[in-house]
Length: 236
Ligand SMILES: C[S@@+](CC[C@H](N)C(=O)[O-])C[C@H]1O[C@@H](n2cnc3c(N)ncnc32)[C@H](O)[C@@H]1O
Image (tube, rainbow, N blue to C red):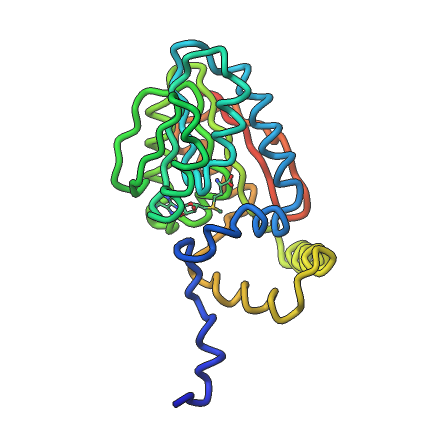
């Protein structure tokens, strides 16, 4: 029997990266995040400044392994060790398949909150930290800083909140327009934002800079910004 409110509650605060989403994930994220492919391409170009033959490079929250395949292709001639980490079994299995032709790419099923990171020259976290509970987030930024070699880079892409309510209203409206233009219906947009309650928790630009600085980063720049999406490059 269906009770009043069942439908409303079905999509409330229950977003998950598991199950069927994996198969459509790349299409879904490309449609949902402006300049998503461009942000990957930029990351690959920037990696030239940090990676050499002996480097370790992490992709934290690697999902389907798309960025790792681009990186591994780009650096084919080098013996870089690429490590992707994701907590969702289906994502990990999908990523392992996508990356199976690259012997130097390893995908690990691990919770970022429970692992030790090896010394690395470059760490990517694209739209992942926003899913780490705020109470744990600083700890993870600290670990990222500690695991980087001196001169190593951290590429962080996040959805960001605005510095005040007027800007936030504008950005929400602009982003809703963007999603409508991408073919999402109003119902789909509302259902997704309801499902993300308490799961996706974006910080503002200043909030992210605070996390980076408290972790120890001094040299930080913005490499991309569009509506409510921002890419930061921090160098140790
Ligand atoms: C928005 S997706 C990341 C997209 C991906 N980085 C890309 O560039 O296409 C967020 C990913 O982070 C993973 N994730 C969330 N919390 C995690 C955690 N505690 N440990 C490991 N992975 C986590 C999710 O399973 C999901 O695959």
